[in-house]
Amino acid sequence: MHRTVLIAVFFLLSLPSGAQIVNRLKVDKEVFELYAQHRLDMFNPANIAFADSLYNTGIKHDNFRYKCLARSLQFPAYYAIGEYDKMDEAVAEIKRLTHNKPDCRAYRFEVLHEYCQYLIRCNRASDAMIEARAMERSANNTKTPVGLLYAYRIMGLIQSYRSNSWLAIRNFEKAAAFCKEAKAEQELPYLLILTAQEQVKLEKFEDAETTCSEAEKWQEFMPSMRIMVKMVRAYLYNAQQRWDEFWSCYDDLLVDPLYRMQTDRDTRYGIDVAYLRSKGLFEEALVKADSLGIARERHALKHGIFAQTGRFENAYGELDSLMIEKDSIYIKVQNEDMAILDAEMNNAQLRQAAERLRHQNQNTILLGFLVMFAIAFMAILVSQWQLRQNLEEMRSKNSQMLIARRAYQKALDAKEAENAMKVKILQNRKSNTIKL
Image (tube, rainbow, N blue to C red; front, side, top):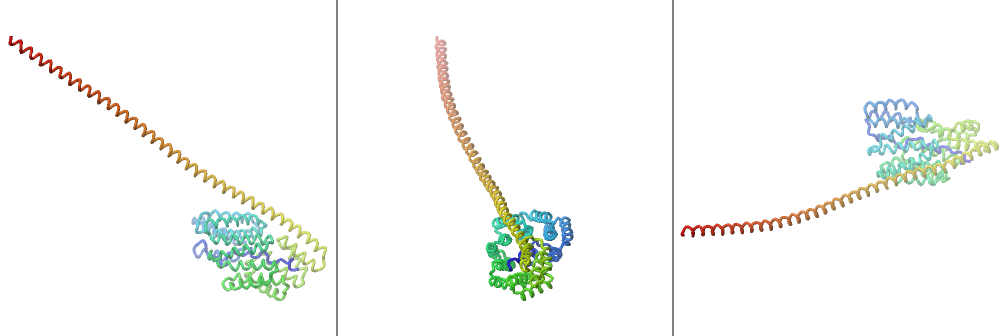
């Protein structure tokens, strides 16, 4: 019977990803304290107005960190009131504002992690998986362990959504392995809680008890951990029909202000249905079950109530609707897988094309250098050959000119000697004439 009472299956998706509200953007203390106060009641639509004011302050002072805080305060509220387009726009702006800013990586991963949680709740698991895979790649490229922690945690939540509990646990274990390296040990108890929830689904009740006890050790430092442990224990006790312990957990939850502040309506309604049913208040349980927004959970709860009260025709109708819903979810999962593969294939093809282009550019540049070098080398060779030719020609001309000059000089010398001889002969003739 407990398998049809799937309470608190996704309640953790509605909680902040971190154990504490951390000033990751390093904004001034006064602004951060105001932000943190509103963040404690993060599903309150009134946060949108405060966030608008904070955003305008960011514009006035040209402070992108204020803008990021404003948007990260808005999108949980947009999720709560069903304005998913505005939720997407707020996260898209955070992505844009934090792009290529190393000191904002941890904050960026935290925001994307929370956003993926809401995508899963909106039946957009394929979008969440694409985001998670992108987070994984980015974290590996930038060597950011906290990014890997959040990426694997989201992958685990997606597997939980798909009812693959053992795969969910495997991803939670991967995420836990990065807690210490990321200096985010405060995330470990959250992963323990998620693991315990999957162990209950697998009917590993003793393991779930042990895991809850491990997570419970952190509640002194984390007030929200107290609520989470109680909710998982309520889920566990209800599955085992340990009514006294279940009722005690339920009563404790109702009087704790954090329970209403940090859980969404469907989560609380699911636990209410389990409580009413355990008390035999079946009609009230049916009314409450009708108010659930998740169709699969609504049909499962109503099927269990009708079967328990002997209204088998109604139970059959709810079971038929549940099977149709599960079939549609199965088909959706297949389509999601195809969409993820297509997206990743396209991304891979783009990366390969970019890599090919980079290599092509490198080869082109190298070839250009080689061609330029060859041309320059040939030009040098030709220039040297031409220079040698010119030198040889000049040597030849100089040699010929030297020979001609020497011949001319010899001719001049001969002429001069001839003239001297003629002068001497004339002088002799003149001397002889005088004597006569």
